[in-house]
Length: 157
Image (cartoon, helix red, strand yellow):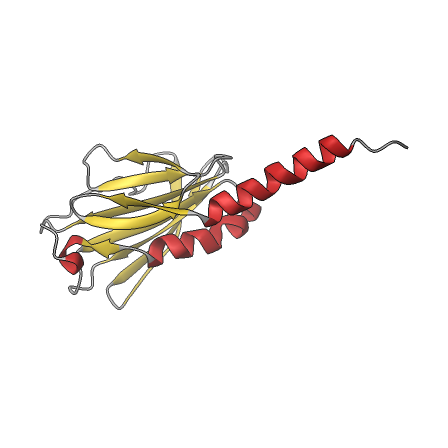
């Protein structure tokens, strides 16, 4: 059996470049917050400009952040949609944790609302197509959430 070393090298190189690109972080800054996200993710600002979506290159996961200093919170972009069902919801120490599943089983998502009175109201979410996708991207999601800085924390307007 003859081994095509060029094909092997190219495959390994592409796999490693995705790993290193995922470890490289870029900064997203809005009027309300600054957050770091994997550089190889695609960014889309929400319609109300108080949040953003960050989609992985393989489109298997989406990170979400939403933050506002407005007193009226209302319905932000990641509340339950018509084709979803809430699996569980709990509140503890100013944080509400919600787990949602698409009715057709095509994805699950989780989000946490943080309204602790110390920082601006904020929501972090992750949507994923499978348990494997969640497991693969969870460490990056934790870095993403941990990098959040509200505009009140930075002294920005």
